[in-house]
Amino acid sequence: MPVEVGMKAPTFALLDAAEGERHSLEEALQRGPVVLAIYKASCQASKTAMPFLERIFRAYPHERLTVWGIAQDSANVTRSFMRRYGVSFPVLLDQDDYAVSRAFDIPATPTIVLIDRDGTVLWQAAGFQKAAMTELSRRVAELLGVEPVDVVAGTDDVPDWVPG
Image (cartoon, rainbow, N blue to C red):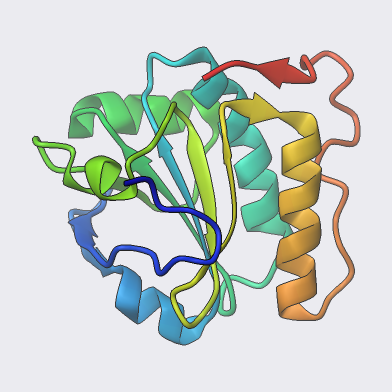
């Protein structure tokens, strides 16, 4: 059954592609909300979405918001993808059996999920949509009690929608 808004997010712990460090959803939620983007490097919608998630990562306080990619790729492919698309937030490696992807029962890549501190899924989207990135930024700002950042400003060359 897919994880839907209002449900508790499945807990997990994964290693990141850059340093091999273990990251736990439970530990991240102690600091604040979490944005997850489950993606595949070969997916055009994922390639389009990641720079917008990087903008969200840079716009809001790191000590109060966690942004993670969850890659359905090898560590080498993931590190190359991070360099190519300018991703500086941690990207975690889904296990060989795609345990996290399966636990969230994602419909497409990327699937982006906003999780509140109590573990409740507050928002989610699949594929890439500029309007969804704007909404995600607004929701993050609301949770953090700060002004929202326009993460789609200056991206007229990017399509409004890319299917996942």
